[in-house]
Length: 261
Image (cartoon, rainbow, N blue to C red; front, side, top):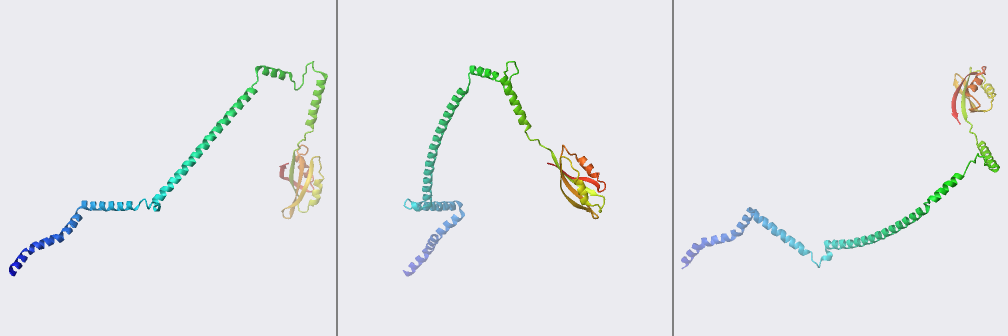
């Protein structure tokens, strides 16, 4: 009996081995098959993504709404929206009130301008009367025979007053400021004596000014002297000719500066 039992055991052993092998190889084959099938891999990824999304949605609950940043941000936006609506409503009311005030002021201005224009518009009769009055006014008097002695006297007095007033106006005198360079013959010429002789030249409208000795070369100096002349009374050519007449002292006369005053 023992031998038969053992033979039977070993006889069925292959079948048990196959069953055991299939048992252990089953999940591995499915895994290998999923490795080679992209569709199965995509399905697994989709399931994982859905599971993660559901977990995130479950995390945001009504009980935890006060702690969620999204909920706090939404509440803040709602409050800001309400504030903006209230400010817009206030500005709209102010704008409407301003428009009403502008309309009222424009109406008052139009009414005032219309009354002023009506008051200023003269009638044709007033225009004719004004023209007649203008014709009657003679500002300079009349030369007709109907002019009275009193009117002639008044006119003469006004003309005399006008002439006197015109004669009192200050007359502008044209003057010039001139600087003359007077050169001597040599270094032995006494410049002080030469200056004295030059200042002896006098004429109405001629005024001598400051002077100085300016070195030229080789120890020779020249006299630089200024004067103010009235253009209508003193000629520059005449003045230079008068200075050059001092032949014992003066070699030449040059105009160093000429300015109108």
